[in-house]
Amino acid sequence: MKSLLKSLLKSLLKSLMHSLFLMAVLVAFWPSTSQAISRAEVIDRARAYCLHPWTCDSDNLQASCLSGYSSEFVIGDHMGLPYDWGGYVTLHDFDERIANGYGAGTPVGGDVASCTTGVDCSGYVSVVWNTGHYGTWTIEAVTSVFTSDNDLLPGDAFNEPGYHITLFYDRLPDGSLRYFEAMPPVTWLNPVSSWSGVSGFDRIRFDDITDGGSDLGTLSNPIVISSFPYSDDRNTLNAPSDLLDACGAMPGTNESGREFIYVFDIQQPGQLFVTVTDGTGVDIDVHLYRDVAERDCFARHDSMLDLPIDVCGRYYLVADTFVNSSGVEQAGLYHLEVEFTPGAGSCQTQTTYDFMGALGEPCGNPYDSDGPFCNPNLGALTCLYSSTDSFCSKPCESESDCLADFPGGCCADIDDNDFYCLPSSFCEAPEPDGGDVDAGDLDGGFPDAGTEDAGGVDAGGVDAGGVDAGGVDAGGVDAGGVDAGGVDAGGVDAGGVDAGGVDAGGVDAGGVDAGGVDAGGEDAGEVDAGLEDAGSSSGDQTGSNCPDGLVDYEGIGCAPPGWEPESEESCGCAGAGSPTGGLAFFFLAMIFLRRRGTRQA
Image (cartoon, rainbow, N blue to C red):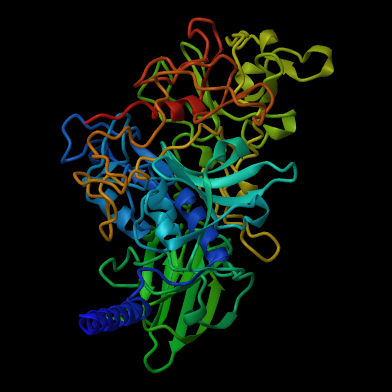
């Protein structure tokens, strides 16, 4: 009997060792859904999703698979991908879906749907890391957790499973935090979030991220062609960008390999001549763009472009890697030549995007619910309105902060040291005591409403020309590089949104199965979108980590003292003062918080 037991035990151990060996082999050789990516590329990809230009038309206001759907976007040009619960999409696929009539983002109270497009918080971080689609419950399968904030590096993330995930960018000189996030209504760089806002979040690092890396030749930092003729030699095997996957001039051609991006300015009409040469097995094509979206690519060729340029302005030249029918990227060495011969005549005017929600533009408010939201990617953080007027504004310290976006305007104290930029029509009264204009002294119809400030946030526009309040400037050429827009637009930290952190079905290799069960075992139809129920209580006041004048409410973010949401489904106007009181605040923070009500199937 003893011999038999010994034999059985030996057999079991042998089987176990064999199984462990097979498992080790499978782990070692199992294909990964991700590949190494540098921190520089992660930040470039994150920024590109915030700065991406697109146009919403009437088809995108509805969704074919959802009755009663109504997008929060309005017809017109927009910057930044919409927040879409359960969304995970490349820029190329997003543009295609918008063109094919998908609904733009998830509206208030909406659900996961196959006929809407955009990204949610976890989809955004997943696609920026260039990995498969993970939710907040599952993303830690491809990350490691660390504890010290001193170890944070650009491209790391803050994650609270079932609630929200954000992508760390940097710290400002005063120690405050900045991170990228997908949060209703758009992806953006949040520069005013408090550390308490990520209290309880795991600090995580993507397993395949590498330190350093160069961003030269990306949308954030294109290679500047400052004079003609110009020549360059590079290798797309080492290209820092993999965002542009097609050209609008030949949309069916697969250009999903890696690319180098160049930029130049044309100041008079003339003839542009571009050649690219490559070696055997290498196929690098040249594309010419008027702006940074694939639909703005109006000329493409395998080896040569020879075309007249009669529209002056900025152009982007892309050396992109062709992918053949077998799915092989034909990357490698190339030689680029660019010539421009000036001609006679005058320039035609270049058509640019006219973005909704820019500084000084009208905005949605209780008197005009159909207006656009103020877009933080354009530096517009606050909608100021009366019963007859509205405009997007930003906090200021002096008139110099306003003049570029509000010609003839002023920096006015609209309520107890809450200074915001106002248009010239509201700055007609003389400045009292030689100082800044007080809103109570203005005769523009905006008397002091006595409301709370959204935090005295210094939006500062969007990083020195990355976006210049009216369009993707993609940066002015500035002494050797194009700033392409670090999105330094301000904003108010309205807390976190999961809406995809609860994976609503787990990872299914590319999307959220809205009818499935997430890693926590909760049915998507019963999940509160993974959010705190912002509609049922005002939250706990947790301290003073917010800008002056605001209180940090746990699970919600920064808001005026005593703030309480108005209702479960709509807390947008809480703390905004009476709309009959003259000047009223309609803070973007409140627009964000409006989305945090309970979701039910």
